[in-house]
Image 1 (cartoon, rainbow, N blue to C red):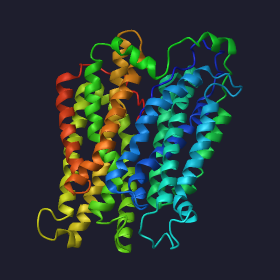
Image 2 (image 1 turned 90 degrees about the horizontal axis):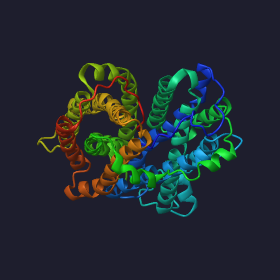
Image 3 (image 1 turned 30 degrees about the vertical axis):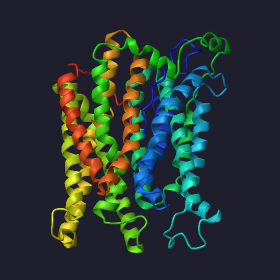
Length: 478
């Protein structure tokens, strides 16, 4: 789940200005953002629980998430480089959007039918609904499809954002960005609702959104002469590292607080639906039929919780700008980290209570069990607001710092991306073995997340620069 670098928009002197587009046309041209976010939502809700049903141990599932930071560090900068220089008659961005979306559709098919692929390759002669042993061919197909999904999502994400900027014209980037984020919210809702109903591989939303974008996003082809002039420009991953010594004052502090903030979020992002299936619904992906059914019901409820989370996120996004105007971006950021600290501690307490670690047989009492499940679902909703802050304020602060030195937006955003993907690598490599060490399922990872959130709040209070953010832009994040 990596947040990539923003790509330069339209008026860059690399070709003719794009034709003016109406506001409804701009709305339809950005539709592919919803399709891409639909793919991210499927990953977040279904990866960890589903892959365990194929025989991959719980301690190793977090390693699967390494594809996100790898794709964020490699794919987006390279795609950005080549899309800036693309001379296709379709324009600079649409060829990459179309190619990426075709691969996304293929990868979703592979993921959705990985069990059938494994069955055809000889995993078992029993029906997959009753077989409980390992299915390594199915797991291999799932992993291949998942990595293709992540890399192709990253292939589309960067050019889609650049296309938004290219076409904004007289409407301005704020209007285009608001439209882009509205499509992202819709993609989240559709993705999580598909995950909660198990109909996710049947969706045609991505294909529809891609077709609409290809029709309404009328790009102007890049002049080959202009492309040759830009061949010597520094870009891609190497340019980010070369320019780190030119970061504006205050940016190193932002990077530290951002890293701590994401360290507090990734355990929940990776294991939220798995936590519902295991700790709250007492299911097991490799247990008896009753345990498998309980696990799957918990996963569906977790996906429903993520759907509600997305709705709250969308509503909260309209509140962040006035809050930052009134309280300051630093106060809002610190407050959100404090909320996450409390929420992650509550997740740990609910888990221990549900598993009976506080003594007694509370999980056998129907009323208590119902209350625990309702409380767990409420936590998903509760986390919608701090996640909206996570997806906006760090990027707004970074943009403000970059503007204070007269530019360097691409550099600062690229470096901020590193402070996001590195924590993701840390959690992906360490969360599974950490949980296995204590034998408490997902509880140890959530407990550590609470500590990281407290550290992020303390570091933000001390280190973040005082900035009056006048325009908070929902710049990205999944």
